[in-house]
Image (cartoon, rainbow, N blue to C red; front, side, top):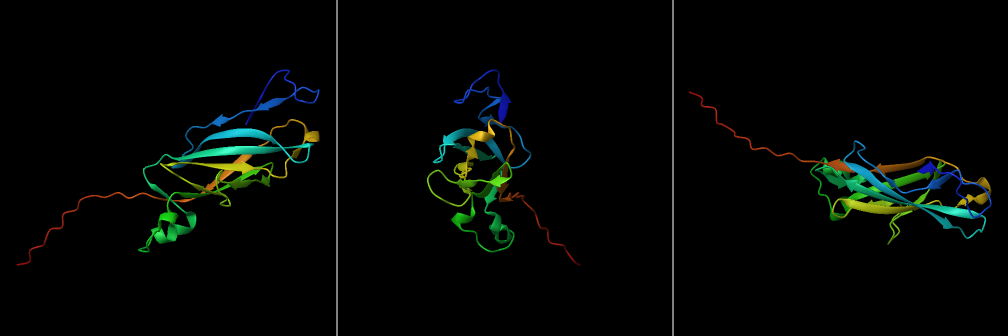
Length: 165
C-alpha cells in the first residue's frame, strides 16, 4: 500500500518514510477479484489520530453468477433463489490485525457489497483511528471476500430409443 519516498515532510517536522497510494491490482485467480483500492487518511475526532479509509472496488471477472454465501445450499438444490441472493458479497477487512468497519457508501449493510453490472464498491474504515505518535509505518491490509459462485454449462443431448426384437 505504501512505497518509499525521499525527504517528504508530514505536518510534523519529521521526514516521512512512505506515502499512502491507491492500488490497482491484476489477476488474483478467483472469479471475483479486488480491482482497485483507494486509500484516504481522514481526520479523527481525536486531534491526535487519523482514521484510515479504504474504498475497495471488486469485479466479477468470471462467466458465472455471484450468490450470497449463505445461499449456496439453495443454489445446489431445487430451492428457488430470490433477487437478494444474487450479486452479494460479504467483505471483511483487517488493518494491523484490527477488523475495520465495512459498509456501502450509501447504506449500512454490515460489510455486504452488492454488485451491479458485475462491479461493486465498499468503504472500510478503521474507526478507532491510529495515534499520530505511532508515526508513519507500513502494515498489511487484508481483504476477505465471502461469496458463492454458480456457473452453468448446457449441451444438447440426443436420446435414442434402443430397439429390442
